[in-house]
Amino acid sequence: MAKNVIPIQKPKTFWSQVHKNRIKIALSLFFVLLPIILVLIAYVGTYTNQKKIHFDATATEETVYVKKFVNPDELDAITLDITWYELRHPVLDDNGELTGGSYTFDIFYTAKENYDVINVSVTPVLKTPWIDYWSIGQTKQLRLSSIDVEIPFNFDLPVKPLWFIEVTDPILYLKVDYTFSSAGSQVQKTGYVRLVLEDLNPTRVATS
Image (cartoon, rainbow, N blue to C red):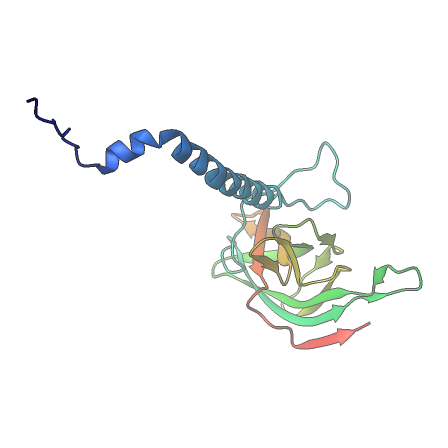
């Protein structure tokens, strides 16, 4: 009488299960990773685009975009002292437009040792990261004592342009043109300064 042969079952291993369900796993990874990748691309692209800073009243084909900025104390011949004096919130006018908003800074310069500084001027720009809120102020001549530098800014903040990203304040950018005397001749230079306002507070807050 023939004996019943009981087939030997091989133990299931991790890799055998992966191989058996490879299509399901691939589809699952695709639908999980694809949204993450798309979100990362959106974040990186948005952040990169908003780092383009210029100091022209209106951007043209000849506009130069600046990427390299230094701290207020890192210019060659001068140190800038910047105090955020006032934040003025914009209000809605009769046409439903925001108006009257501004940021005001007290700024003066100090010449570094061995530099005979002749004149210094700044062109200020306020620009938010992640979103295209941009405003330019008038060019001002700086002195050894502080002057007010005001930049209009008629935008509502804080704002959330992307998931997990909240923009509370713009960043202050300065184009600094300065002239100093060296070896009997005048040297003209331009530097670019960046000051993050996110962790700073104005001396006063007002509403137009």
